[in-house]
Image 1 (tube, one colour):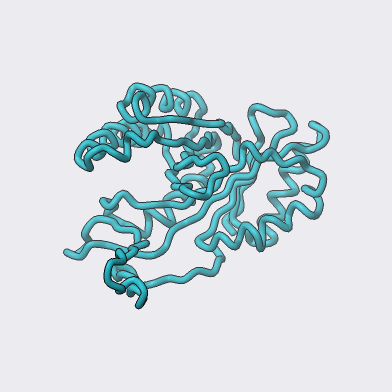
Image 2 (tube, rainbow, N blue to C red):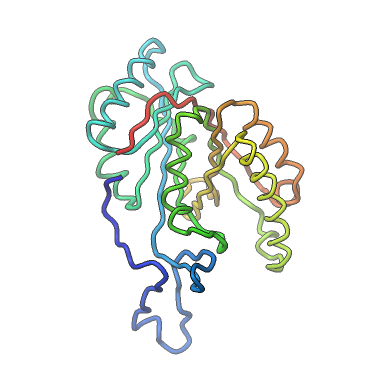
Length: 264
């Protein structure tokens, strides 16, 4: 994966600025934290940004050719990405791309839409999603969880079905005590791990606070070998306390079949 980024050493914290040391000002810590490794808690100021763009080609008959040409273009320019056939639209195509430096979306992805085969497509802004990988504080291998696992999941040819959707929790969740939040999230996580252990579904969890036009907080990706288990997982999650009590909004849902992949 070719991209530029600032890479502080793992297990170190960014040095606070002089302003952050001023009396009365809180110290802002933007590091991601994982579990302890060799007795030291893992920390790093690196994360992966992922962006989904969805668009329609003018004529349905052009969709298959456009998907193939876009896949070739991504590989020739070494842009990591996945190209989807939109299950819900005969003219629809999805493009997932990623990088540690979000400037990639401006510098490399944006120009693709000014030339063939994308110059005449119609972007569907209501389906656009962007987010960043984040840690829960317990990851045994922090770098893998933040930078490698999401890419491994979306590039796997064993998981051609992908479902993407944004969500926002209600303010009531943020007001809960940390111990209560932990119990609620653990219930949610255990269901996801059960599906993953049986190779039914794997997830990609991204935070999008302040990045989403609709004020969503997270972007979720579900990938798997078949479509039904992905739907089944969403259905099972509806019964959890987090979803039934504290999810204010979910969707729209993008259902894509991965037909072209580029490792970058």
